[in-house]
Amino acid sequence: MRGKKGQNMKKYEEEKYRFENIKDRIYPWVRGELSTPYAVNGKHISEKDTPVVSFIGGLGIIFVIKRDEDVFEVLKDHMLMPECDVEALYYASCENLVRDVEFVIGNTWYGGFAILADGWHEASALCFKHIWQVCVDKLKDDLVIMAPTRETVLFAPASQKEAVRKMTEHGRQAYAQAKDKISEDLMVFSKDRKELMLYKE
Image 1 (cartoon, rainbow, N blue to C red):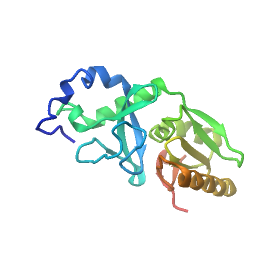
Image 2 (image 1 turned 180 degrees about the vertical axis):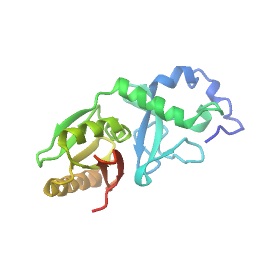
Image 3 (image 1 turned 90 degrees about the vertical axis):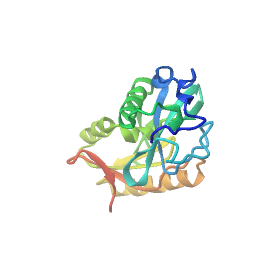
Image 4 (image 1 turned 60 degrees about the vertical axis):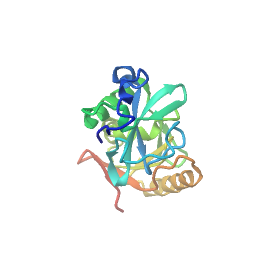
């Protein structure tokens, strides 16, 4: 995860990549595979040259720089100073997201719920424990959660088996049709343990 020596070593000194110029526009994106067709340089991402934070169930978190209204660039190692702390970067990127994007809970027709944001950052809601904590407190139940695509995050109370079944069907259809897939796996946010885990039926 450190910057590499060589011809690109000084990229982080360019105006476009100076940390003070981009630090407020870096956001976390949850990925199932290390690629994203919606970032200008997102077709080929490798842990060899890109900071990736491991997340639940084989998912990873990459960082993107917002360049324009709908233009994002994946943050690669050579854009960061060698001493950059990736964990600190993750927390800072989450703070940027909380500041800039409003997450809203919507209802689904089958008794589940969806996270609505701006069409880019819905899946990033997985990073925010406080969103899930508010929902378990309100529903007084564990939550079964699915993030099939970048812009689709669904959840249902774990005890409502029919809602969970229909949510899973909905999520798998979204996954099958999406260009920007994330995962078909189910997760659970436990009201007792207060953490996000893989769901085991």
